[in-house]
Length: 285
Image: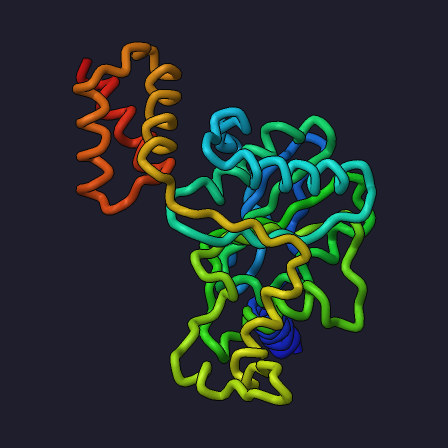
């Protein structure tokens, strides 16, 4: 009898372990009063908040050449922190122009006012409805940060994001916004044949269904911020700024020529290229 009972107990433990594996427990919550930044990570199908112990220390003042975009996202974020209406934000455009850095700088600027940053990878966006549920009772203000976002047409995470932005029967918490960066304006690949679906109706252009579907996602971001490659003057001004920050005050003709060659080799006059050149040059002098 005892052996049979022990066998049943062992079977029950085995079954319980299988259930726990397929139905993960609720994610452990950080102490949001002390923690300012987290990543959402999946391990063995279990999602959890991973604390970022050393958030990026870039400052708003370090981001040069994007004053218009900076002013708009700062205004939106300040409204959000003051519990006023604010929009989800899509930052799109050329690579290396400060899209991601701008969001990281917001955390450094406003963490003391209750701003919190939660980074989530594209393939984990399917967990987004469950993630934001835990923020409803919190007094802090949360920005969900999705970096370098792009989707394929049938991507399940695309549908999850679309639903959370504006399409679910459940209202999103008023202490959560989504800030996303992308090189694509509409987050989805666009093909020539889709433009051929457009129709001219009484002199008005009506997009085809494929184009409308792509636009419908980006339209759910209330604020679009566009980022473009810098011209030569802007690029050199950014290089000069970073050299000064790295204690190289003399921006000589030699350094200017080297900076332009650096950008030419990389095919990009961007803030990232300027920062990388400045580090290289400062290390040489």
